[in-house]
Image 1 (cartoon, rainbow, N blue to C red):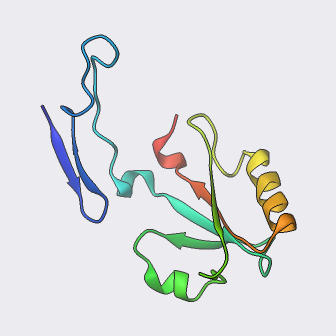
Image 2 (image 1 turned 180 degrees about the horizontal axis):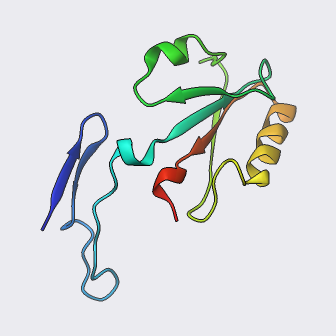
Length: 114
């Protein structure tokens, strides 16, 4: 049994998801410092050039084009992909911004995937 706390995110244990048949091996999540998740904000004001927002950087979101009155969409790549190589992510972002005035975040967690 192992556990880890990541302030601002949560407490995790290996005990919570253990199942002898379906999940006999359980790993703790990697640290935010290891994964280095980036949130790349696009709006109609900056469709081409993303504004990079990192976890906990309140000033970055205040200085960005984020509009709290607009709907927000998050596009997250899968385990074997990342935002730099996922053309589908850019295409989906473009379609959202064509369809409406959204805050669109491309989420890059490539530091923690395959």
